[in-house]
Structures are given as structure tokens and as C-alpha cells.
Image (cartoon, rainbow, N blue to C red; front, side, top):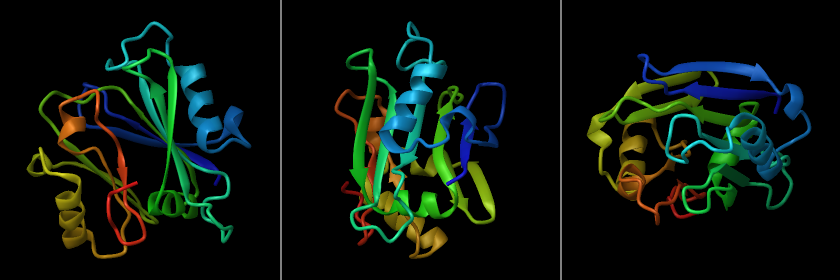
Amino acid sequence: MDKILRINMGPDGDPKVSEEGLGDYAGLGGRALTSAVVAKEVPPLCHPLGEANKLVIAPGLLSGTAAAMSGRISVGCKSPLTGGIKESNAGGQPSQMLARLGYAGIVLEGKPKEGNLYKVFINKDGVQITPDNNLCMVGNYDLVEKMKGEYGDKIACISIGPAGEMKMSAASIAFTDMEQRPTR
């Protein structure tokens, strides 16, 4: 894993995608990478749901290898519940696929225009971001079925479901497992 994918959802138009080398983050993965990015790049006094916060998704250092139990992925940001740096860890296929594509992390930054829901598709050919408001308020299980119908069976999904869309305090991020269940 040798690059970071940045997706700027800023309000100045369409989302912008860029890739960069690891730089100061070389040698970090998972929780170490998410916490380092948040500590370095997120203003401590920003609002957790504001555009200055960043959501960082990072596979563990051993993801993408044949090592047992290596399919771990971390998500970090400034927490809306505590106001501090928070990291959560899950298992599933997205960590393996992102690592095999060379991504040590994805940094989501900025805030999209209100009312638009975006779909991010990442594969060996690049990154596509498209607005897809047909996915609004679709549950995680139904969303995975829709994505399989659109992209085929060999996919991994990360989704937030209706609770995430409504910014509820009990919202979570779901990662598909080997059976493509968004349960992790």
C-alpha cells in the first residue's frame, strides 16, 4: 500500500479526487494512520459534522496479504459524541480490496451540497464518483443487493444506511463480509 486517496466533497461543485504518496504517513496503517491524519489535518475546534472534519478509512498494515485475520479496517474522525479523535475497527472484504489496489487510506474531506447522495466506485481502473439519489434512505442490505446488480458479485461495500444519512448518534458504517453481508 503506497498511496492515499483523497476525495474532496466540497461545495464548490463536483467532488474532486486526488491520489498522493504516503509522505509523513509512511509506515502507518489502520488506527495509526486514521489518528495521525485527524491529529495533523483536522482543526481541534472544528464542528464534528462540519466541513473541516475528515473521515479517514484505512486498512490495517497486513490487509491484502495472506496473513490470517488480516482483513481489518479502521475508520477515524473527530467524534460527534466525544469531540475527540475516535477510531473504530471492523473486519470484512473492503480492507483486503483497498489494500490490493494499493490504498493505505481514503480521506473524505469537505462537505457535499445538501440533498445529494454520492456513490464512490473504486477499482483497478480508477475512482468514479457519481450522484445517486436513488440510494437515499436505502438500508445497508438492500444497498448491497443494488450494488451487486450494478457492478457484479465480486464487490465489497462500505455503507452508512439511513441512520448515517440522518446523522443519528447511533449511526454506524457497515462493511461487507465474505458473504457480502453488511454486518461488520
